[in-house]
Length: 399
Image (cartoon, rainbow, N blue to C red; front, side, top):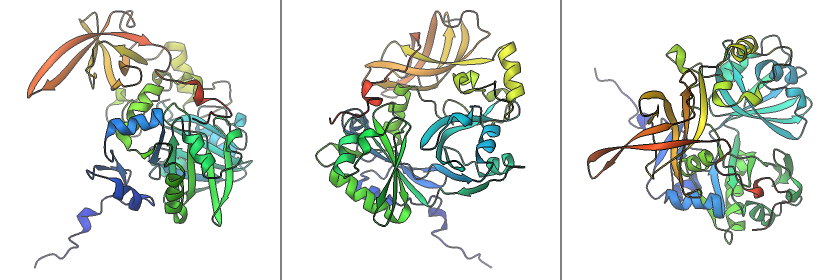
């Protein structure tokens, strides 16, 4: 007897977001990937044009697949203070904070942004799905946790003309919104939330609205931005911008601790350059004892930013000390169009003697079916590769 099945079943492995109808019209190559169960665009037309929309005009990216959780209740602050590494009592209502959370061994489970709407009302946004971890962490706390991923549509609006576009939309008062601030607007019978946040290191905002208002928001945004160089972008362009800004990405620069197979493949906040997020002076949080021990004894790795000679990105390259001993590996790499520089993040073993001097990247690249190998000198870069003053200016300029 032949089994009966829906022939379309295997085509439905990814769900469309509320913005998909508009994005599908713009996609010229149908280049999509699955972001935690949802369709997300790699690019629409041209990665380079989309990247320069971030740096020179106004870019729009669909953030709807991002995991979004609403945490409410009398113990909401205490719950977060117990779970994440930073002191959550310092995050005031109407503000957004970036943090990481660890397992008992002090290894990073994920990073994300925490929105505080009121005294007992928060939203957590993360790249990975975290509902199970949140439920486990909530034991003993009076909190209610709701997965809002499907119900909240979100857009990242980034670039020097992003403020001008939102002003053109009629969002009065947006000029006073400071970095990591939140403001709410009435919107077609519902609410539109705007946060001055983003993943590009540039002037930018994130817009949050109910799914039923998503297409209206998209249309009004693009109508307002038609004279300001507005353009939809995919994840390929964003990846260039976030490396320039010095932002790490789960799955690229670290593997979440609950996904690693080998014991030494996880990373602590100190090993990711996030020690400034670890507040050991607060009484207790998951992983605190392990992180205290690590700070006393030292870490296994350090994440560094590198300027690399040449113009061949060092994707997945080994970093050598003195071209003799392996010192680490590149986690993210790109040729930066704005910096006119080959840049990368690398995870280096701290046990290597003087690893920050005499560093070399062994780069392989293919040209006309021929693989080539080059050695390029690397220099540690202490600051973000790109951090323009307009990112923090309040009010922003009307570019």
